[in-house]
Structure formats: C-alpha cells, structure tokens
Length: 635
Image 1 (cartoon, helix red, strand yellow):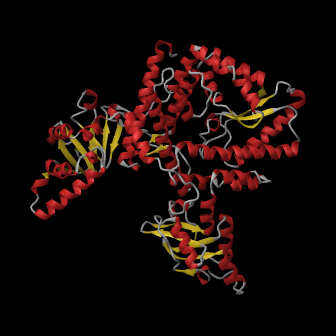
Image 2 (tube, helix red, strand yellow):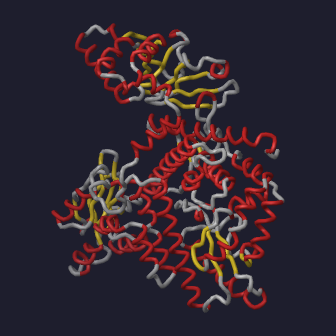
Image 3 (cartoon, rainbow, N blue to C red):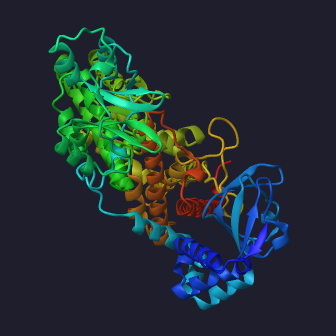
C-alpha cells in the first residue's frame, strides 16, 4: 500500500497526520537538527508505505535511491547465505542511496511484522543537506564526535543510593512477587515468609491482588487475638491495600507510607502485579553506597553475616544504574565491595591461623584488578610471597589461608574461577622471585597461550598485604615488555581476537543460533576488545596503570594511539558498559540469571545507533593495530 501524504480525502485528517509525522521526525536525529520551518514542510514531500508482514524491503516500486525511516514494525536484513545481518525497528533507517554497492546489494530484506515506513527520495534529502549544514553534519559527523555527544548527553551527576526523587519504585523491586492464596492457612503463610525471607505476602487469586498479610498481622490479628493457626489468610489480611505503579517515584512511596502509617506497598499497574516494597527498601536505597557497604563488611564476624551484607551489591547496582552512574563509578563501586569482602575474609582467617609467617600480598587480576568488576564476575586472584618463603615451613599456612578466602568469596557469590586462576592454586601462590620468572618467560618466550596469561596478570592490583612486593615485581616487567616487539605483536594479535559484531555498512551481526539467537554479546565483542586495546597501548608506552579508561587517558597521543582514538574508545567503553549495566539491572529485578547478551530490538533507536558507532570505533582501532604491526602479527 502506497500513498502520498497529500492524497487524504479529509483536510483535517491530513493536517493531523502531517503534524504527527513532523513531531516524530523532530525526535529522530538527524532530522531533529532541521529548523522548524523545514520540518513543517518535509512530511508533505515524503511518501508513506504500509508493508504487510513478509513483504520485500526495500519495496521495489520505490526505486533504489531512497531513504527509508521505519515508523512502526520490524525488518530483517539477510545476506546471500540467508544469515541474519541486521534487524531494523522503529526509528531505524536505511539509506539506499548512500549504500548502493555490491556488498550492500547482496543484502535482502523482509518485513517480519506489519510495517509502516516513511520514504524520502534522495533528491529531497540532498536538497535538505545542501540547505542545512547541521542536518548534513548529522550524516557526515565522525564516529568520534557522535560518541562524544552521546556521552555528554548521558552524563549527569549521579546521586547513587540517596536520591528518592530520582529513583522510581521499579528500582526498588528486586524480586518477583511472593504471593499466597487467600485459602492458605496461617501456619503455612508464616512458613512461606520465613523461607522467602520476607516480612509480608501478597494475597492473590487469578492474577489479581486481593490484599496483603504482614508479620505484624500474624502477631496482632492471629497470635494476640487467639486465632487458630489453621485459619485462612483471608481472615487476617488487609483487603484492597493501597498500591503504587512502577513509574512512581521512591519519594512518593515514602510520603504515601508516612501518610497512611504503613510499612509495605504493593507495586501494581496496568501490566499487572510486580512485587512489593517496604520501608526497609527505602532506607536501604538511601544508605546503599559502596562506602557504607564496605564499612559494614568490616564489622562482620561470620561468613553468614558477610553473605547477607554482600547481597546488597545487587541493590547497589540497581540504584547506581537508576542514578545514571558512569562506567568507572559502577566498576569501582562493585569492585570496592569485593575488595572489602576479600580483606575481611583474610582478617578473619588470620585471627584463626595467626599472623602470616612471611610478608605477603593478595592481588586481584583480570577485571577486579582493573577495578571493572561486575556482579556476575568470577574470581581472578593470586598471592605474592616474600622470597624468604619456605614451602616446608610455611606452605600449609598459606594453603589453608587461600583456600578459606577463595571458598568464602565463592559462598558470597564470587564464583570460583573455571580456569583455577586463584590464590588457592599453588601455581599462583609463589614467592616474588618465582613470579618474576613467570613474567619474564611470558614476555621473552611468547606464544598464544602465554600472552593470555600475561594479559591477565599484567592487570595485577594489591587488595591486601604488602604492596611493595607487587611493586618490586612489576617495576622491571613494564620496560621489558616495551623492549620485546615479539611480545607486543602477540599482544596485538590478542587484541584482535574478538571482533566487534559489525557487518556490511554498520549492520549488527547477531548471534545466529542457540538460546541467545538474535542478540549481541556486549562483553566478548564490545568491552573485551577495548580492554585488550587499552592494555596494548599502555604497555607499549611503558604506562603502569591497569584500569582501562585510565590506560586510554594516559596513552592518548603516545605511540600509535591518537588523542581522538583514545577519546573515542573511552566513549565506546562507557556506552557499552552502561548498556550492559542496565541489562543486568533488568535481569536482577526479574530475578533471572545474568548474561551479557542484549537484543538490539530491546534498545531505543538512538541507542542502537550509538552502539553501532561504538562497534565502528573498535573496528577502526583494530584496523590501525593491524596496520601498525603488519607482518609481525603471529598467525
């Protein structure tokens, strides 16, 4: 179905339609850069196509040189082998006039939903570009500038864990509803509350909220009133309780609870019953920050108490995401909690075993070493020992210490490393002299296996103990790495190992099969390539920093990394990290297993564009690395 905007039989309908199109364009870059008068005229110069599900895209009758902007619906683009290369959704576009070459022509599209698309002829687009420089710049602006603008627009001062006006009720709901039937007996209700560790139950039937019953209700309306424990929940529940929607502010929830003198509020809206919040949730939202959590960890005397406090890192993550925290702040916050937990576990074990017989340093490697830990990371750690260490006299002590700490971290949610890169593995619990032999051997006799080990342990940071041991170890390794071009070549190859999922003309390449089909892996193909590039640039320039953003900042303008390249990678890292963090926050609220796979269709049109820019930035820097190292790259 095709019709021009001028062809409507009703003048009022035409005006309303044109205004609706104008308002949509005003929200979508680069059209949002057009002046009001140009935006007002543009809808009448476009055509609208309605394509039923299964239709060819772009529609052949429009000709090849057109710009297509999806208003509603979805389109899949596949290559000649039928492999899915991209999904287009509302706000996405395809500029056939700018991408009509052989590789792009090999892509064929089909609508997978009934789709409404706005069609602009290339000559109209060219006129607008010629008349409006800012609009033209929207097409021509560099990836670096677009990412920089995206970062600037997203960066607002975070106020994590204390701003109830900024947080929504949805940010406080951290688990699915714990519900009971109105016919459940009171003894079973009390058992359910104990098992689920909640102080109130939602009473539901057929998906509808009938009431709530709290632990206080069980005391005052059951025990104190002499009611039998076999009575039904409906006899003591509060009927038709006050509720709030997910979009309400946490401050509104606080005021509502204060006004009604209640401690629990069900969260209900048109989408259904989502859970319940309590005054405890509100207090925790105001007090949940990394310093507060770390301080409480330092006072814990048992593993059970530590486990309970560390569980709050989930709420910490949700609160910080809701308050727009930057990647560096999120990584440091979660890392600081794990650091505090590690130190406390070591201190408790030393109380049991006695002081270490020789000086030592517990070091974090990998993401914890870089200060970029997430709530789903496994352990990466090691122990550096003074060279006076004697295995016969001291070995049992440090074996017991490290085993207890690694097991304690695992019990608190930081799972054991599948590759056993942990201090409890005797290979990674060695005197400084042995560690020096390890690193010198990896740098001077490099292969693909040892460069992977080096990449992990060169991100080393002391969490507890004598940092002089780490400093003594690393002070000679940095200059040694700079001198060995073969090692740097292997490190460069390592940095090229994970390619961004970007195909022909910036089309996202999605996971093809399995449970994550139709998604992109933000960690493996987004964050890790930047981490590896930053490490390469830092070591090649003799920089000792281990954090990714700090490495990029210090390496900017030195060696092969330009100032623009560093800034672009920093912006890409922050963007991808924030998208993953928001994805994790959503999974935490739904109480499902965390992963790094995000469906582009779940992102807004601007977010998809920014993600493509981020992947393009990574690809550009990887090409630069490949060019710089040339024939030195190992096969």
